[in-house]
Amino acid sequence: MGKLDGKIAVITGGSTGMGFATAKLFAREGAKVVITGRDQAALDAAARDIGSGVAPFRSDISKLSDIDALKTHVESRYGRLDILFANAGGGRPIPLHETSEDDFDAVADTNFKGTFFTVQKLVPLMQAGASIIMTTSMQDEKGIPGFAIYSATKAAIRSLARTLTAELGPTGIRTNALSPGLIDTDIMRKAGLSDDMIAGVKTQMIAATPLRRIGTGEDIASAALFLASTDSSYISGIELTADGGFAQI
Image 1: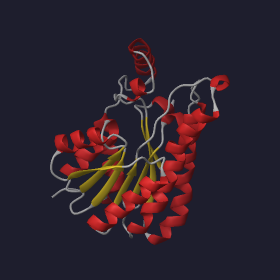
Image 2: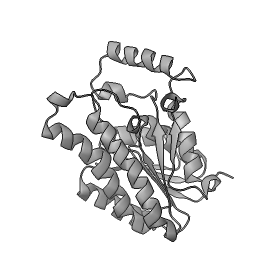
Image 3: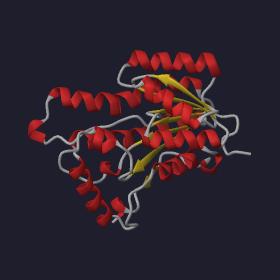
Image 4: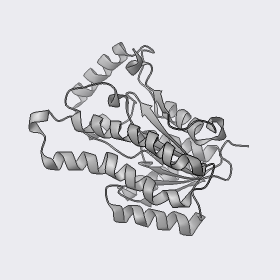
């Protein structure tokens, strides 16, 4: 038997990286998983790769109409939701003096506004015993030049996990944050960093990480599985950090 047998899960940003690895693990553990993202082709490819137990649904969390459509889809197809992994997000390094309002809105609308309303709109489908997991970042604790907006949105999500624990806890719904360190995904390339810049970041991060390696999508998936399953049934409001010790020293 799997740890998530019979559970219904939604993973935003589920077509690549940490979301994809988590969808793969959740499906293997018995869940029916809906993965979302902006790119239909990438979603379809991810669903084919994972196979049974995973269904794609195109949805951009920065658009409230898309979140409404996601809720309608989950409700009509499954009738409920047991696990929400609000994982979608991103950002690129921008110096303070170069940041425009459009830059600010692009990151804040996805990372914080999108996460907030994803939770708000899907919570009515959840009952006692359900689990909400929101992706933060070790950068909500570490100051890294050029990431002012990104880091602030991740800190806001960390705060949201505490508030939702107080608000939703009496209903039996658990809310936790999952904080990755540097993970070996394509996020830095998508953020516009060159291969040389990525190599430099990795070298610096490995040297500063006590475990002396970069994390994998599977590392994050295992942490998400813990927070999604009954293994963490008395845990709510925490930030589970999976960063090889980087932000802890």
